[in-house]
Image (cartoon, rainbow, N blue to C red; front, top):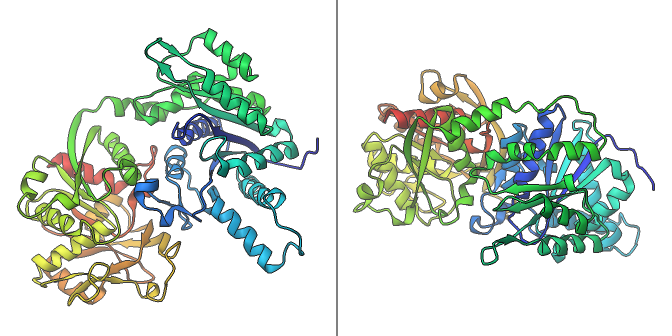
Length: 538
């Protein structure tokens, strides 16, 4: 068996029986345990769809689009990776079938294959292997965990499974581990967990030439030792490599459940990795203790237009959990559809809320509802946070109702508005393609002393992640500042207004960037922490 030189070790996480079993959370939990043992770990996601990235996908299709520092529009699982590991991900951490084929087709057009017939094997699989090894070859990581989207047996994930088979053969079995995540359905009529779907799933993986080393079984009931033995026998794995993943009350419990099941130890044994020290999970346990035992509770209205699918605002939801723990309080989110808010019902819709967040989004639908809710928050001293489009709506509301600029709007919603207080960024005006063309990734922001933003951050220079095409129109800045809405955060290079706030208000802040992308368990985002604190004081 050939061994190509490899410095990093590779862990592959596949799924069987059904999708949405939580491969991302298992991957992030294992990574957390290995990280807490002193290893440098990163996680990448291989997504089998043909979209080049999720940037053009409707949030109803795929949940939120997560943005990295270097401007990659990625799968929401990368948000989990960052929140658990407290280390940033990059372009290399999310690979799609679209990206793979695009690269191969471009190379074929350039003549790079010297007239050969370009095929799934070897050309597509070679490109997949190259992408998998990219992170491992940087020298920055000891372990690369690769999560393969979808389920084994899906036509679209076949090239990925084949690439993994080849890669394990190339680097040698002590440098790779395959974890297969599967479902043990519970039949209430007979009162037992059934192993047959797991057996079939492993059999299918074996047909593709891969023997899983570890089985992680999602279950709603505890597994008996006999059941583990049965699965181990039929699926050809050690009994200690049959891991129970029981339903948890919060995703943040999963690393501790996996530690109890010794998943990290089984992986290290297979990879022949020395145990540097036992996992240091104290900070995590403290976080979980506070999460489960809050001292107080607040209600925050989350106003958006994709609220039917909670995953559309995944990072915002998690940021509230982090900020809630930092304030030792439980944040109950009240989901309010912006299309259902109008002048007549706004009071009854928003009654009893301690704070209001207006969520990001695109397009005209639900805009007036957002603006009406913001007016209510501003006039009734309800703590308010607007993110991206939420900030832009706050600017439009202020222009109309305080500055008296009738019909003021964003040119995204009304191209012919007399008062374009939000306008398309100059560099965006010539762009026709939709995918990957927005202002994306991390940009610097200078904070003004003595402002609400400064009280949150406690520093003058920050950097935040962006995803937008429209911006505050600086032609109106002086009128806004004179009337009491100040720009408390400015991009030093472009003069772009990053943060606006209303002076005589307990907490009224709008941000052009997405603070939720940077909040982690260990480092909750200061704006969310301060916003929750303002809600508590309210």
